[in-house]
Image (cartoon, rainbow, N blue to C red):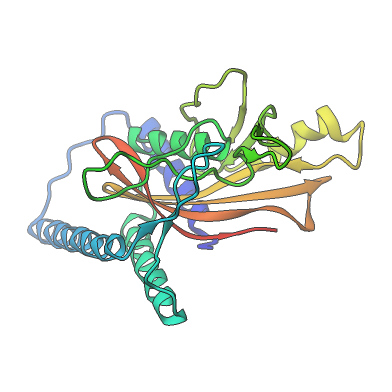
Length: 284
C-alpha cells in the first residue's frame, strides 16, 4: 500500500534536516512572478481539494448510521451504512471513502511529519492501537460524541459464563510500535508502561535486534509482535494512517501469522483528531 511513500517521506525529512543544519540562517529568496503564479495555482488546487473532501464527507456521513452494540463491556460505536444492502450500494460507499483517501494522499504525500499536528495524530493512533484510549468518531449533528470500537484485539469481551467482562489478552502487555517516518512522539498515559516505540528508518531493525537480545536468544521460537504505523499522510485538517500488525520469528515474517491491519481516515476538529472512516481492514 503506497510502498514507497514512507521511504519518500523519510528521505525528504532527512533532506530538510540536513539543509537546516548546513545553513541555520538561509539567505532570503526573491520570488519571481513565475513563482508567484505557481504558488497561486497550488493554493487554488488545495482549496479545490478541500472543497472536494468536504463534499464527499457530507455524502459519506449522509448515508451512515450506527450499529447497536449494546453497552456491555464498553464496545464503543461502529459506523455502518444500513441502507446500502446491495453490492452496488456497498461499493459506492467504499468509493466515497477511497476518494477522500486519494485526495489526501495526492495533496499530502511528502509533507512534513515533524509538526505538532502529526505528533497529536500519532498519539491518537498509538493510544487506540494499544487499547489505552479511543478516538471519537467524526460526525455531524449535536448528539453526544461516540467513541470508536476497540482496535485489533484490544477491547474487553463479554464473559459467556457470567455478566462480567473479560479483559483484552494484551491488557497487561507492552505494545511495541515501529514508526518509520518520525523521530519521536507523545506517549499516551497508562497505569504502567504500555508502549515501546522505535522511530526512523532503522526502527524496525532496532526492534528486532533488541527483541533478540532480550528474548530471542534464549527462546528461538519466541515471536515478536508489533504495530507498524506507516504511512502517515496529512493534508490540512485531514489524514490517512495505515497500520499493520505483523508477527515475526528470528526477524522473518511468519506465513499466515498476523494480527491484521487497517487504513484509517481522520479529520481534525478544534485541534482534536477524530476518526472519519475505517477505509479497509483485514485480519489473519
